[in-house]
Image (cartoon, rainbow, N blue to C red; front, side, top):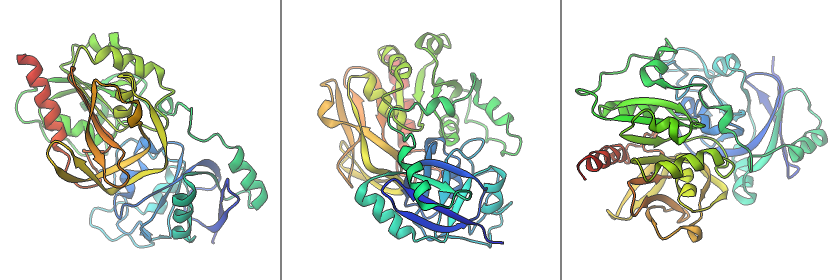
Length: 378
């Protein structure tokens, strides 16, 4: 039996379609992702906390879901919107349907609306607060709820997705028995990396392990004293959800770590590194979300096609003299990478670990490894 669901935006627009996930009502910031594949990785990326994600590709779910292609222990987004949910999952790795996966994880999803019209509205007006409901179907009521919802600016969403305590990457894997065994690292573990987890995608830790590193994961609330007590050779700053500026605890910790140990940040980690070094951030109109975003490597003069997921960016006018720009987003010329001129610290606004997405930028993990090696000989 078909269940009606509605999406109401704060500008007064209402879309009516069919529910195909869980029942209920949620609010969040309505955004879009231009990826053609990788919906399971998107669902389980903690960076989407507090957001209702619209996929621009018209058919989603056609290859099903499995327990290997996940980037965290569960979906974290608020809601999910597609043009058409595929009723057939045709892939030899498929273990269940997208609809069953969403129901199992209590994610409200909507299909059958004009996603092109929705995305065009977001691109024109910017990301909008919205309410997705299978319960309240009164347009005026839903619009008012959307307008009064909290939004993302000024909220600390990291506290909702970080781990409760520290662990080794192998311990993290052992908690989720359905995940595949990791391939052994090449040779002895050479460097100890402490990863500050603000909502980290698991493929990041996999890449650090593949380089032969020991990876210890700490909650993003950890102090610099707690990090340094583990005698790290390098510190990684992970991706995560929402506005970076409220995370004063993380900014303080990073500012104290930068002079003492090599640091590499991705996405939110890149923004926090920049804030810790004296820059500011701002909210993008509708953000960058997809697996086809072009970035220029300024030093190499090359272009990388990258996976991205962020709604905030580093403000170029606020950049202090000791930070230099290393990468630019070619769609809007915003900063996509920075490097500290005197300390061993750098960050990028995109996702070199991909999963899913192109592999053009995976050299950055080797660059981090090499920067640690250089710090040992200097």
